[in-house]
Image (cartoon, rainbow, N blue to C red; front, side):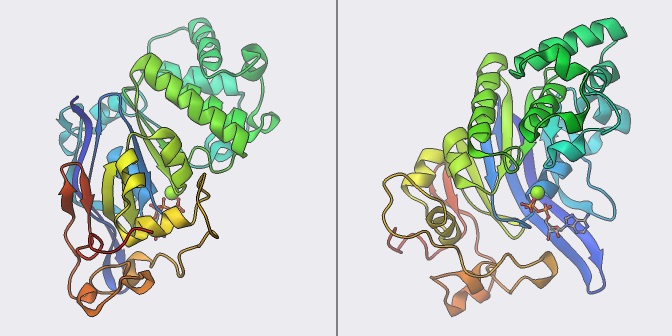
Amino acid sequence: MTDILDIRGLTISLPSEKGEVRPVESLSLAVRDGEAVALVGESGCGKSLTALAALRLLPPPLKMSGGSVWFEGRDMGKLGEKELCGIRGARMAMVFQEPVAALNPVMTVGFQIAEALRAHKQLSWREARARSMELLAEVRLPDPSRIMDSYPHQLSGGMCQRALLAMALSCRPSLLIADEPTTALDVTVQAQLLDLLDHLREAFGLAVLLITHDLSVVARFAQRAYVMYSGRIVEEAPVRELFKRPLHPYTRGLMQSVPRRGAKGRLKAIPGAVPPPGMRPPGCAFGPRCALFRAECQASVPDLLAVEPLHLVRCPFSMAAPIP
Ligand SMILES: Nc1ncnc2c1ncn2[C@@H]1O[C@H](COP(=O)(O)OP(=O)(O)OP(=O)(O)O)[C@@H](O)[C@H]1O
Ligand SMILES: [Mg+2]
């Protein structure tokens, strides 16, 4: 398998009164052809900004101040706006965090999908409409012709999310970045959407980068996962390995805060909160919340080290600590 998306050493900067702050620092992440990868972490750790940087859509004054993004073997930083437009939506598609807000409230769903199609393909309105109906059926929306003529407020959150997915898939992208696609949905609808993503991956060889704060979604969907904390990757591993042997204290904290089948004891939330980019403590940003904290943790940011070829962790003390 080759890497379809390869983010290398991504740093995102933002000017502030106290000087430049970095919401994302030296982040590397790869998605292979047809692979399902998750990027997981609490609110504010930089997941959405990472996705926007991958599409080169960071809103100013945020900027990519370091690293590179390679997509299908091309350096996105070297492409002009015209070439980027040919990639965005067509080869690399994204569904954003807020399904209802992402649709235009004054246009029918059908019009919006047909318009997305016509932005990249030379189709008549009639052809675009017919293709839009097929796409709505592909994302398993019942009664596509009724949905075509509906306005977003006439649909449920789950239906809007599917319509957005139909729009994202309209040009048969090779990579879909799905930012928290299930957060606003109830558990059943959430499970159906993940099933659908699985099906689309198999049917079309689609690679998916799923962004979530929910480890149960990671377990259900992804083959490999990156755990992110305050702008950096703190652990990455194949999902099975991650659940069998979570090493970083942050990953372990996240695991203890989600219900797991067969797990005993009470669920525990990690005390404290993710520091904003300008307020990170020195050294390991997780230090103040960490059960393994010691003075050395403040000296410098630990390296991301391999404990197995595919399992990397950014904490030199976690290997020796007992796994709960
Ligand atoms: N446009 C912006 N201007 C300034 N700061 C921003 C901007 N967008 C995001 N940030 C800051 O960057 C950090 C990372 O934000 P990001 O939206 O990537 O987090 P996230 O991991 O996606 O969180 P969530 O799970 O809540 O969606 C946060 O501290 C946020 O406040
Ligand atoms: Mg986000």
